[in-house]
Amino acid sequence: MTDNLTKCRDDVTISPKVLVVMGVSGSGKTTIAALLAGGLGWNFADGDDLHPAANVAKMKSGTPLTDEDRWPWLDIIAAWIDTARAGRPGVVTCSALKRVYRDRLLAGRADVRLVYLHGSYDVIATRQAARQGHFMPASLIQSQFATLEEPGADEHPISVAVDLAPDVIVAEVIRQIGPL
View 1 (cartoon, one colour):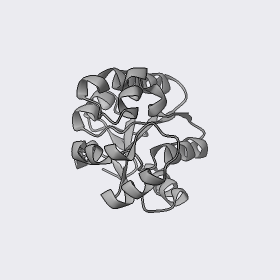
View 2: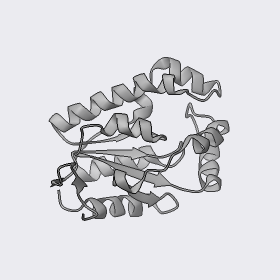
View 3: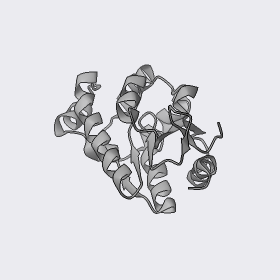
View 4: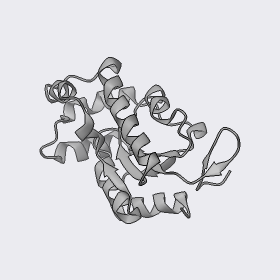
């Protein structure tokens, strides 16, 4: 299989209609996803904006979300993905830290591709500490890394290091997607 295509279960390859930009908080998901969407002419959604109010309040208080907190949020993102798949392609952010979360977003959606932004704890913690006005406090970074299950090869992620410049990250993602 080539780098640039998503593989269906029946061995048919297709171009992605939706990119899910994933990674821990502070990895640059929103910046990269917005640049990708703009460069591709696709719709954009910030998964943070799709959180139920109770989730935001919990994170603001410094309490990590549980799986039970995340399920409704993941269902909202999955609905956004389905809308994009049926119309104009899109890019959405979602931490998608566990395989089970990604399975919920990708199930039956062979035209959805993960973009995994990865970096060391030190790089991410430094970025998060410098972040202004976000509801996710730097104190929760450790819980994000503890929860993270990096995507496996069978998930066909586009994996890019966050210590590159945003334009370089975007160019690499587009290179790996290939012609649309």
